[in-house]
Image (cartoon, rainbow over all chains, first blue to last red; front, side):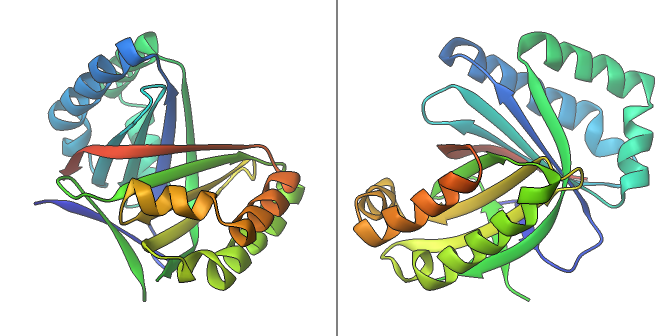
Length: 108
Length: 108
């Protein structure tokens, strides 16, 4: 089972992309994100991981992705093949992509 | 260093709460979430983890939290002390809390 680790004190650039969906578009969007990640994104330099989430009410899809650096993420944004896949994703649902840093992690 | 693990195939209930902030309210909100998590949430039955993120542009704060089950999460929502802390958080910034399942995890 593959997994993603969230931790403070790393140099990773964390992308959290929140898509606003309908129950009818959530699963097709998940499928498209899985395809784009497997075929394009994971082969880009600096890609670390992507974890694709779907809300139980079907109104949001969240891609939680990690890149080695902001420069690697920016280079991906400038890549024509990546742009083509991002356009297909954006045509399916409005996106709110932003880069984050991890401020704190707590456990029970 | 504590960390959170995202994986498919678990029974965890994942809460992703997206707050819309201004650069001036982002850090106070992070501080309040850290305080609420340490003092209240992490002592509730079924709490697993919380990872608090702040966007580099200061316009979003995201709490990525895991609970053992939806029932544990619902019991927290019904707890008066937890409600008091959630109200203080909600007074600082609009929130969009939703429960998610992990659909897929990919690596480079």
